[in-house]
Length: 168
Figure 1 (cartoon, rainbow, N blue to C red):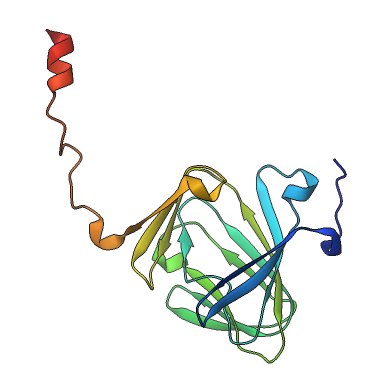
Figure 2 (cartoon, rainbow, N blue to C red):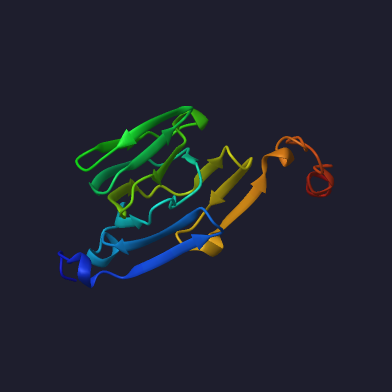
């Protein structure tokens, strides 16, 4: 595998949902054989965000703004961003939640780099859900509404019947 790729030759995928979410991502790291770091160039049209506000419990993300302007939400704060800005998102709870929004008239383009720790738990504060990913593929992910958290205890459904039958 060649250890170099030009963005023009990278596989690009598009994500979009509803009125506010849209982006294209040119995948760089996997194309050159990277195993533990992900990297892509993300392009977000004016007035859109690539993804919902979210935070990672296992992975850190780094962003470098290449062109365009926007705002980044980090926890409860909002910061203006422009070309040359470098943004770090630490793993952790809602105080580390992040989202980049294009507030300009041209595309917002940034390099996104992240670790690829699995399993991964991702919180979505705006919508009150939590995602869990156990494999790199999307079918290895499931989402739960936060209202379902702590509705059972560790011991619920564990009657010990199997233990009793083995113990004799």
